[in-house]
Image (cartoon, rainbow, N blue to C red; front, side, top):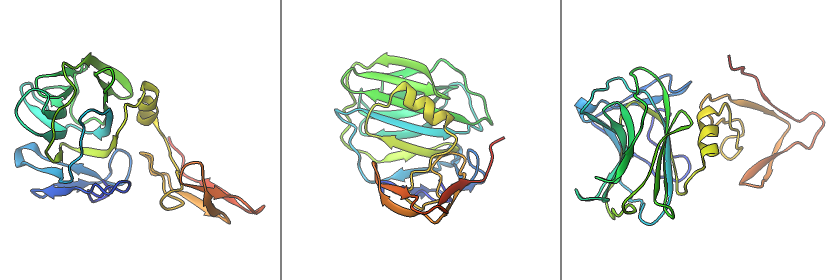
Length: 236
């Protein structure tokens, strides 16, 4: 959410509805997106993505500023129809995280508090029909859905005070989720050489290095005795 709703990986760019505000800093630096429920502010991604008959994972950092029992705070949703297993709902229900397909879901066990950053992850494993909710890298709820998700239409809507929303079309493991929630720095070398895709945005400095084909996308080639890559910031 670096002052925009652009998807830098897959091009699934979002559109801001009712003038939400970009806030700095985000989870650690850069920007986060503040979406006010009472002002009907949200980000919509009009490109349809099918979640039918497939596994998926959605991860994000959230910063609730208002929580109340009996209220719903949408985080990542897709509405098809108001019938069982046709509405994808990843949200805060009252004080807890929930992953629901409409009348078919699981609720987290931990009550959230306001003005606190949380890492939230929602995982659906299609072969086993298992819905799992993670909070700060650890499982907070898990259960078997009655049916897989069946919705075949609808845009994706993103809400609340939120940062670094990531969608994977597979069921990530518990270790993957914990790694993401505790990640300090991630330099993939696939965008700008110095860019840190992790939450702390610890930009690097590359000296006398060249790009080369990597195991995954691009890699760095240190071909000279003077070549080095340095991250000069230190985490406290």
